[in-house]
Image (cartoon, rainbow, N blue to C red; front, side):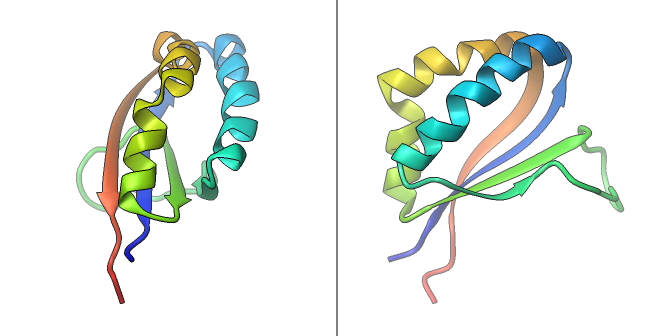
Length: 97
């Protein structure tokens, strides 16, 4: 079964409020089998325009990634992120190798 990924490109506009989201999302993801692969770090945009921060979170399956995003708990918790950042957010199915 192919893994699923949250691929997020964002700009934090309110760092203090974003800290509330970070405090929520880390344990939430761990409880839902989500694992950070990329969380910020150095980045070079070599083509196109990107926002300053890239985050990639891996899930055991595409279905799990979708269900976790659409869960009532995440929809409530992500409100702090929505108010503190602007983002491009995709849920992507990985290769089934």
